[in-house]
Image (cartoon, rainbow, N blue to C red; front, top):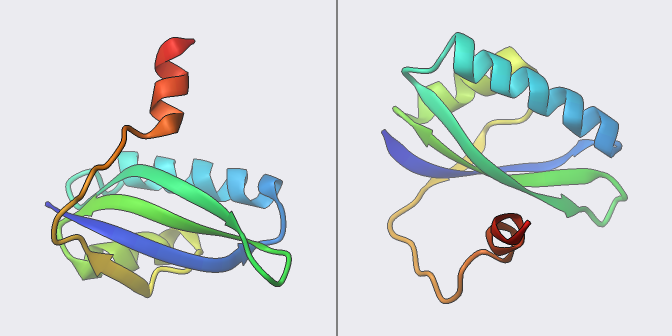
Length: 101
């Protein structure tokens, strides 16, 4: 599988909608498509229009797998980029906080 960044702009009105989509996404990915996609994490952003968007990090077999997963979940999945490499300058602060707890 390859690593991808998926942009889902202004996809949700509030965090409750995002949480419901996240639960459905995890269920479909884990139960129906585990050989094609693997959700790693998502960064949630507040869009200029007041809605919520995400940048999601996934491992996927290919772009068609990303599109199919998004279609099954009912969320945007057309804007994605294959990761060429990763440059780590500092450890992820969210991971550091979780490890300290």
